[in-house]
Image (tube, rainbow, N blue to C red; front, side):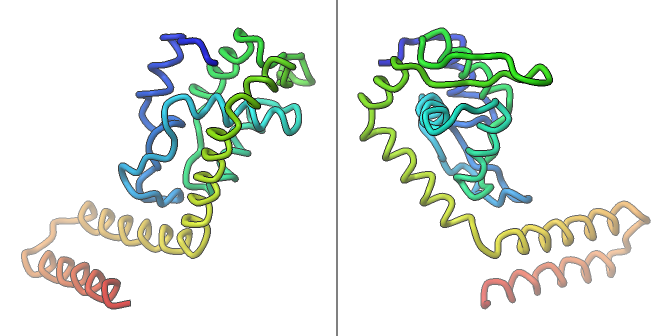
Length: 185
């Protein structure tokens, strides 16, 4: 269904932090390191389905994907826009100029046919997205904030002045104590 376009394939398949690959580590996106979110080629299907629901701007597509995975992943413009260009080249979407240099993407009859042809695969991708959303939607932002707080406190303390061996022992003990409490919680 989708023809191979090597210049898009490598970006989508191997770009760090790009859609198609790994959840972000800790921070506000709180993914587990190395967890695969999407497989190669999924981005095309995701964008095509989102555009089939309603015409969208690139930024709206990025935000819709982020929302569908509960904030666990936010695709970069550097992977979304080339994929939109590919979909346009394949005849699956059309583009019209909109206000403020924006481009509005709409699905074509060919795009709808391609989506229908791959419906089971596309449905599976969106089920995975729902599962990710369910896992990442919860108290995690609070945990991420607390972890960031701890990291900043350690960084500030370690860089503000020389740390004596006793102070270092106290810092290590506090971190170890916090880890033990988290394990028991």
